[in-house]
Amino acid sequence: MKAEHPSPGLKTAIEHLPRPGGSVLDLGRALSANIDFFHGLGSRVRIADFDRTVDEEQARDAIPALWERKLPHLLPFHPGERFDLVLAWDLPNYFSRERWMAVARRITERLTPGGSFHLLVRVGAEMPDHPCDYRIVEPGILSEEILALTNVPPQRLPHADVEKLHPGLVAPRSHLGKHGMQEYVLEHAAAHNLPPRPTAQLRKRAR
Amino acid sequence: MWKRENEAAPAPTPAAAPPAARTEPRVEKNERSEPEPPAPYRAVESSTRAVIGASLELQGDLSGNEDLLIEGRVQGRIQLAQHAVTVGAKGRLSATVHARVLTIEGEVDGNLVAEEVITLKKSARVRGDLVAPRVVIEDGARFKGTIDMDPAKSSQTAQTSGPRPVAGNVDAGKTAAASNTAAPARDAGNSKVS
Image (cartoon, rainbow over all chains, first blue to last red; front, side):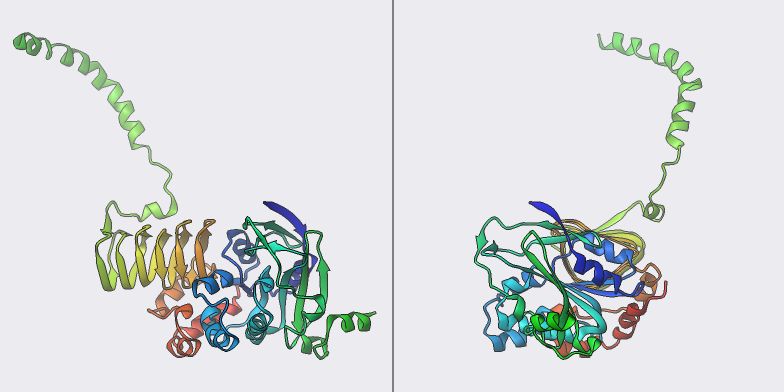
């Protein structure tokens, strides 16, 4: 099942991408549409295929200490490799908080000072048992393809906890789509001269 | 009866053949000799293609002057910069490959460089870095690694890249140590000018 949805956060993140010469990390699957899009902007793309790698390595339920140890193998980088944009679409719900926090720490270390971490998080009472595929139709529009046949109760990632799970980052922008996906554009707190804090307080301050 | 057929047979052939030989063969010849518009890589594609069969296992460096189809297991380095290399559905490759055109249907663990295009078919499973002016990934193909489509980099990378571990297969610390030689070229990719 496919449907197109607006993604204003992605549009903003893409606008901030250096071009040419940007570097993009996609934690999802290798999809031609996305690879071609970023190469059209002159960016280099790394595909992590993280969810399936975790399944293949039978690491999803690894105890936190083992997870931390396995992470460099599950999510490998070249020495000195940095990213201007990291895409984590429909992934956080499929990991426990501790495990996702470890992933976020590893990514934050690799995010360039002006870089963006674009997160799509499912909200609602249930979710497909596997992450969906997302293809960029144009900078502000994503096509969602649901691959799973069954739904499961979600691992909830409340709005207020998003920044807590991404130490060192803040979420100055977020958007709730009609398709039940909340999107966040996380950036280094230092870039905003702000210490990391809950999203709610950030919003209050912005007003 | 045999004799009669033999006698009858030669008569019509020479009678029919001469007029045809004067007109039609020329036309046929012209039609056949019309050059087909060649695809870019066909110009250098050789008429023969070497095959590493499904039961073969090869270790070491491989270079030459013809196209290659791999259905067996290869470990090492393949240098066929002017030719097409295909890893068939049964092919298992743990190697660095430099070719003009690369088509993957099987499993590859290693870095791939192509002068023109790399195609990952839906049955492909690839871990490594791809460098080519054009990369095509069919739906269903499994890929993990970096894709660099800067055309200027293909030949440069091919010259500098040797057999190196794919980051996903080793511990991060080991990766850092083992890939020090390739790192500068790779990092340079982050600051492309063209």
